Length: 117
Image (cartoon, rainbow, N blue to C red; front, side, top):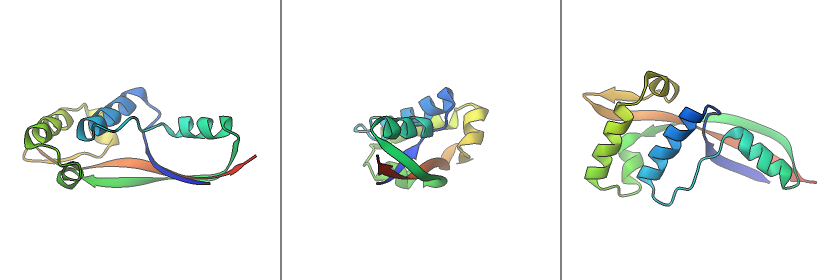
């Protein structure tokens, strides 16, 4: 089995931030899992992890919001929330802001190769 999905950092504050912005942008979003949670779920479901790789994904804020047809008022509120994030969050997610407008940020994803036991 191959699994590719967005994941969140292991740090709970960073996890909560990322899941909040995803849920705000996409009402159907349930949760981006931590890498450790994915591995644990797979192993507990009878899979053996053969290999996995983490990679970064850069999100352009406008494009990211527009994919979900986010209303402008909600987009503005989300921009403000991200722009007002802590330095820890801005550093981790490499948030780029110009003239009080979020331009981009980085998330992470994993690809996991697993086999059923």
